[in-house]
Length: 384
Ligand code: NAD
Ligand code: MG
Picture 1 (cartoon, rainbow, N blue to C red):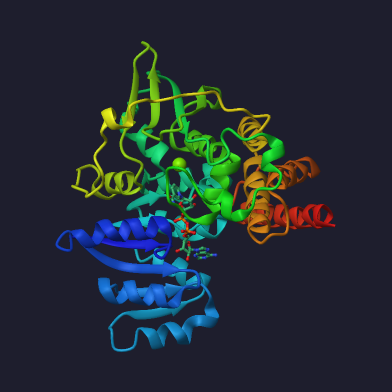
Picture 2: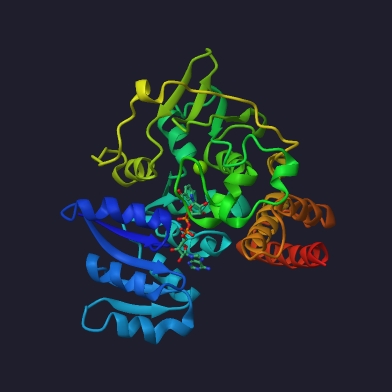
């Protein structure tokens, strides 16, 4: 029996994780579940799974959560600190699936327990990569990649030094893969969240539409796999059947394939180093028929170029990139700026300042806050 904590249990990845965990109640026991503000959703899954504790991030919803859990035997807690405490309970396996930098401290708390942490929350790794990897190593924690591309690489990667010559992440290209900049100018949030192959939360869906997601994933790969930034590539593959590839020095290329369902990589991380059965659709290549590939167009999708530059420069650049992007995506979803303004706002913030590389968590948080403030200023001017 393994204990499982899900940080971000009401989200898309959280829901897929619960789907798998609940299929094998004799194998997994829920320790803690957390969410940001959806009290009813959180209480329902906590009751159903008999979690030990449920934590809501919005402290003002504490009484509502307590009421919703009355008589269930599930403990209630609220506030960002309570989420960190829940992560620190040290479940055997923790899913880090909070979206955005809000997931950084809870993920770090889970890592400090020295157990297995399945990582979906790419923004935390992008902003605090080397700090996070060092923390995992010193605590003896195992970071298991859940992002489908990184899970694919993880499955194909031979860790012996000097063997791997290249990592190639695949990208669907998003809903605007064939659109001109002119067509993208008037895109609405509803159009941009409609991903052709994957069903995901709003923020990552927008990132997929701008290709910022692939840029964040290149930075993520750089931290998860010990290989130079110059050996990381992205390729557009609209069918999302090949989830990524590892090229070896002898010319062999290993790929992981499967139907586009996040439960496949989550199941891999959940059962690792074993395997578990899933109800996911089986891949039928005859039905798929054709696998296509193209080079990403960084002129139409400048967010990818910005992320690559941040990866190459290192230091504080990835944290600034991520913070400005989170702010810009939220503004786009709120109707305050246009679709093309997202990458423009990120570029402007990156051009504005050059703080030294962060060496502590507090420094990452400070850089993130400053970048968000600058992004707000940039976007106020854009909207005016
Ligand atoms: P989502 O929006 O569906 O869910 C986010 C979860 O985080 C929710 O449970 C929400 O309550 C919680 N949350 C949000 N803000 C919070 C805050 N300030 N404090 C505490 N909790 C907060 O997002 P998602 O699509 O499930 O994505 C989660 C993470 O996984 C993201 O980092 C995303 O990039 C990554 N990811 C998602 C997918 C996917 O298929 N959805 C694939 C790969 C990677
Ligand atoms: Mg991905």
